[in-house]
Image (tube, rainbow, N blue to C red; front, side, top):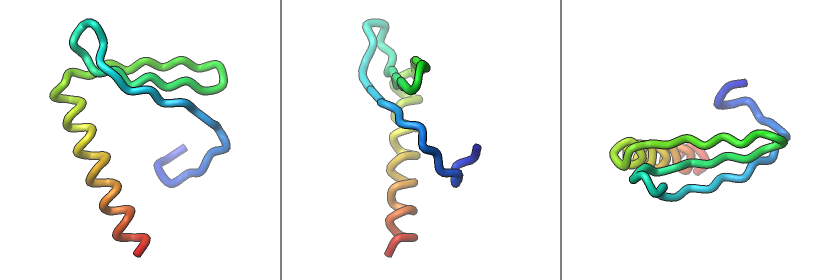
Length: 62
């Protein structure tokens, strides 16, 4: 499965700080619980990548 492959799997995404000073992305889907912890700096880099991807997707859609 790649970035351009569609899927019928539904998932829930939660994002928040942990009590250890990390940023957690928590994904829950069909019997899968996947916590992913990032430093605040890594989380900011991910946020920048999401924003850049949203801008690129918006440009392709117009």
